[in-house]
Length: 136
Image: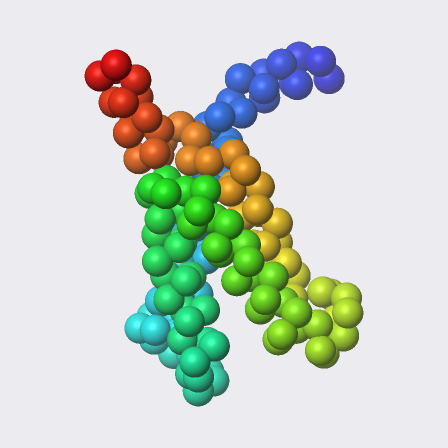
């Protein structure tokens, strides 16, 4: 068990980067569906709230994937997911398994974690911070 833990701990930064990138891609796909009807048409009519959510999903998800302005983008996406959960899913029942809100609840907490950790390796934020430290 100890050997497995040691082996896995060597990939912590890479695993975090992959989680950030994959979650960002999945999140932005909700925005492309709402705003661009891609890859599937959004099944409900858009209103001001769903349009705003789609914009945050598209732009925020893209920034998270790129690792650019990662912490503020992830914090905004986390907040949008919390609002989405409480306004759309919670009125149908408190428990995510009963109200269909598992995915948005996960986004809320994953992006809260990303907001606290930042872009990490494989991010534009990381490249920019390395450039700043080399100049000084």
